Length: 276
View (cartoon, one colour):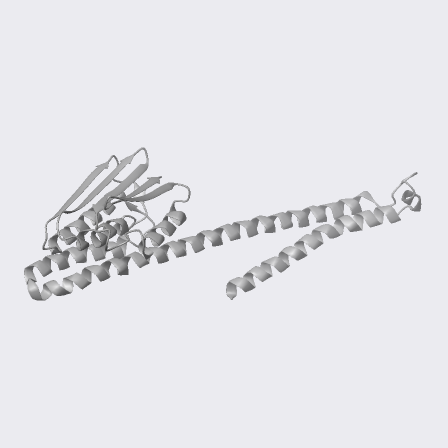
């Protein structure tokens, strides 16, 4: 409501400024024309009776109001751009915050069962989860984090999941990063990794695998996740997670990213490329 009122005030002020800027032109034209009746007829024998100082005064007045109108117009454009950026940041933060509850709900749901079964293992899980929550709360609220910090977070996630499974799984995480200080938005890759475990490892009784490759070269970061899954149980590409990720990419990296997914022979692949 306050924003609407401010916009209305700006529009009214702008309209008044534009009207006032046009008044001097009409006045000058009217005075000059009416100062000599003969000028009406093809402006023959034109000799204005208005003094130069008066004309100069109106000209300067017009120039001042014209400049004010231009200033107001530029200010409005900048205000609209700023408002659009702020709205985009708010939406990005909202989407980012949606990652945390979705992820931690799955972890806590599994942790509940370990408390009664194996206290030592439950303690290890709690420590891992505590580190991840600390990262999500403090680093996850920042605009950007380093790629090195994000890698550490992903490794913690992998260790957490590997620890809680009874079955044997093959998880391979390869990193080839030239500069671990490259900046990216936080919690960008966790959803793809979580999908690989949730829709792949958890639904397979044996021979489950997850392969993750993260590399950077010339300010280009490539993240690839590959896993097997049971095609009769899940549709891995569905869900709010993928839509959330796509929207975050549109807001944070417009026209500077590629996101591809493919499914073939019970193998799911996700590839995300960022061009910083």
